[in-house]
Image 1 (cartoon, rainbow, N blue to C red):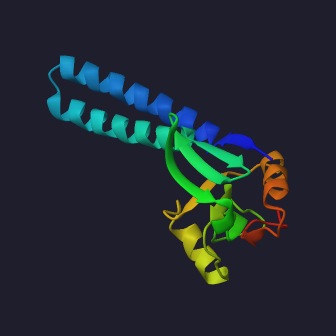
Image 2: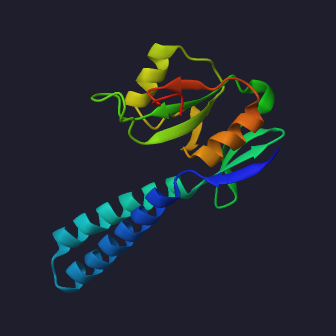
Length: 159
C-alpha cells in the first residue's frame, strides 16, 4: 500500500500567493524609498513563503513506513516498525464540540493518552509527529495502510 499526499494543499497555495504579493509590495516600497516598510513586507513575505513550503511538503505512505519530503529531500521518516499511533485530531479545542475546526491525520512513533493528544492540539503543529490535512479519502487510505485502530481527539463523530 503506497500513497503520496500534500500536507495541506489549500494552505500552501494561499501562503505562496500571500508571500508573493508581500514580496512584490516590498520591491515597490523599496523603489519608493520606504525602506522600513520594504523590510517589513519582505519579512512577512518570507514568513508566508516558509509556511507555504512546509504545507506543500509530501507525505508518503509506503510499505517501509511514513516519510515527509520537501522538494525531494527527506525531512522526517518513521519506519513502519516504529509507528506506534495513528490518529485524527480536530484543532478547535474550545467551544462547540460539534465544530471540530481543521482536522489532521497524524503519525507518531510513541503512544499518547488523551491528555497528551489534547496538548498536541494546543501546540500544533507537532514537532515529533508527521501530519497531513484530513479528508475521508485520506482517512480510508491511512486505515488501509495502518490496519489498526485510529486514535481520535476532538474529531467529531469519529471522523
